[in-house]
Image (tube, rainbow, N blue to C red; front, side):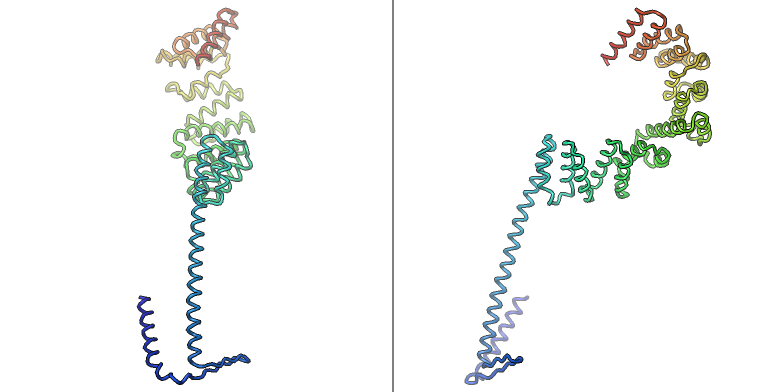
Length: 392
């Protein structure tokens, strides 16, 4: 379209020239241009020639300038493309060196990519190499640079939080995780690290408040953390306020928590730790009226009572119902041993070892025989326990 317009304009100019030229022959005309003290005096023909020359000069100069600019852009694009290819090769080389364990090579290659656009992954590579070289400050600096890129922010912050936890700095880990956006905070790695950081910083109440929302993300770890929360909260009360406040705290807990086996196990553990063995026996038996509970049964082993008759009766009742259960015999052996009934303890432990021998059981049998002055038997059991440990 532009070419057509230019052609029409050229034709019009030629027509005008053909019509006007005859009338100008012999009459050059007169042109006077005055601007202040500057005066131009010439003929119409000479002015036309000057304008024509100026137009040609403008065309030539503009063409040269345009081609020069175009060539410069092409050269810059070529050099830029070459630079990008060089950075990409360095980026791939840094990843390869990291996988090979060549930390110095990975660091050197990653440094060549810092001006490139790799969404921060190049800084993550440099940080991993720095961690391997035990250069903590460098690793943190590179991770903070990687965190400036949206696609690398989660990986960088999670790594920083993990490093903080490894350095026993849970508060620092929580601070790093708080810098994530809402979507990133809901990721599984961020949730698991936050739970761990809250636990290590002793913020059990806060962790308990948040844990319900993390059930899906934690999966099988949810039950483990639920028990640890119970242990943490109860241990905190027991250590700061004593046994009486521990019992009051337990009584004031909601029914749901008091019926939770994790909380029950944690409470019994704290009663035993406080020396309240009679109370521990009572609650353990009450919670297992319908039969032994896997999480609670082993706690009987820690009972130190001169006359644990209710526990012995319950264990013997459960053994009659399940005579091949080695764990029941083992627990009975411990209870009897701590009560000073070495005969019952020996009988129960011998049965447990026949059903399912363990190093722990052999060593207790050795200790029991040592107390009964049966030194040869004790030595044989010790050797058996050491043999089982070597085989394990």
